[in-house]
Image (cartoon, rainbow, N blue to C red; front, side, top):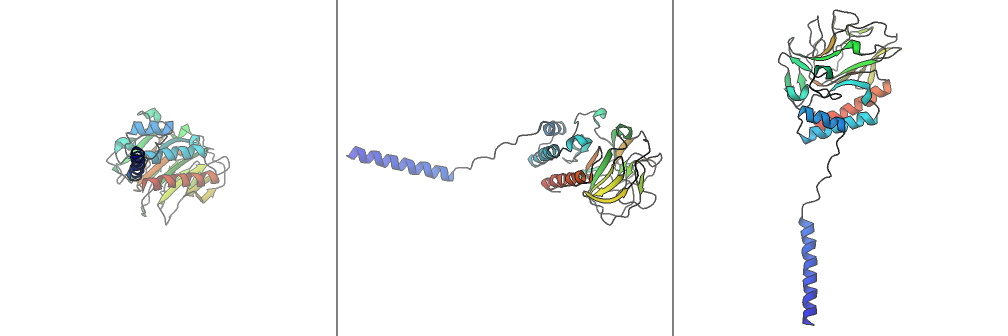
Length: 276
């Protein structure tokens, strides 16, 4: 009888001990992130080590693919990591080669966690991607600005010296007009932050801010190409940089109104995840 009581006491004590141990032990760790292969290639090439940035990039790629927008772009520059080494890579092809459209920087751009600023005439990035690589009836470029200012100038583009120019000005006092395959417009926008895009189709050219139509030029683009590469931070010939911090830039195919709105939401999710 004593042995049986002792046995019960041991069993009861063991149950209590194990229960307490489970209660005060560390919770199970979060499951490992399954990285998309394209996101992982970029993360490894750019040397991104921050977990928040890695997850943001991964989610960004997955959302673009899920929405069938991934294939729409030739170049995507997420501007993450806060250094020249991390900012130069093209998310679509993160090889360290001009032919992969990685950025080459000139001057002394200002790199930070919030993006990249080109404050002077000497500061810009060359994408090595010429406008002749696009279809003028199906093309777009976009620039996410983190800066509110009224500085008239070019934020991205090819040249102000050869038709069809192909350049984006977020704030455009004359002569700094946005011009995209026959579209030309001077916009003194009260808001210079957010995602700005020019997009062409077989019937028109449209300017968007945050996925919403700002204006439309209702004729089919009819011009050729400058055969010059896109610059980020300024355009050629007219020396008026917009001086707006870039948090993301893209070049690729044209987007419909619905696609432009979806793309903006995906980009905004990306920026929110990065806390900027």
